Image 1 (spheres, rainbow, N blue to C red):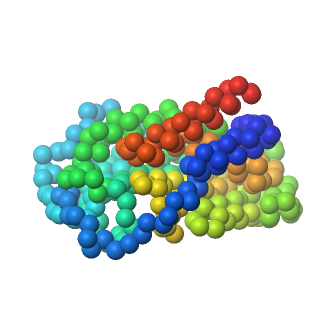
Image 2: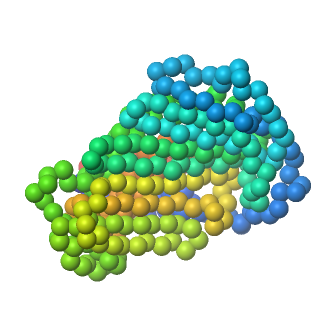
Image 3: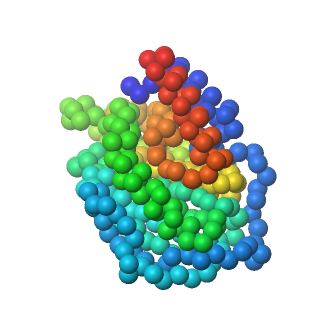
Length: 287
């Protein structure tokens, strides 16, 4: 088990009370408007290259193309099993959401037939010239060193989602928060999204689909509310009743603590760190 149910509910309550920084938007006023008056900055763009985690990674000399835009972008695709990645630098002058910077991750962990651990990190900034390249230079070592952290996350998630013993099969899955249905020899699925009105879908899949989890985490500075800025989790699991509401809370808590993104601000990233530290301290105290 990840965490005892009673403790888990206490932890989730504490996390949500701390200005809702774990997967919930704050009640700050929505800050969305047209970008026509936003200052233009210089962005590294039209640059993409691959690298190994074993290398000393630097932006190659061939990447010297710059254009002015309202925001710069960086997309970092990382394979934490193969220890390899790629990065793409570009710009974005289409968004109408006003923020200084944002970091998002779309991750997929598979438990069968082989273990996979992949993350796509998307950084967007309007903090100054070449902010996408500067962020990469500052934090690429951090993202390459997340291998152990994400391995720990997948290990925790396996307690809730994955039974390696093929003799154990699913008999029931939830189809609502408190309602079970028969799902003999199938797999359970849960989908959660926190965009404005939080929604959770519970499903039985009649076939044995591979166990996996996809999650998206988005953090912005300042914290904003917008339909396009949302967190989500979808997973398929092969343990009886594994798509329970309590199980989904355990999954969300594990992702919130171990996801690993850095927003590079003094507001949101430090607040997230403080709450995570509190949760980890409580977990160690009660277990």
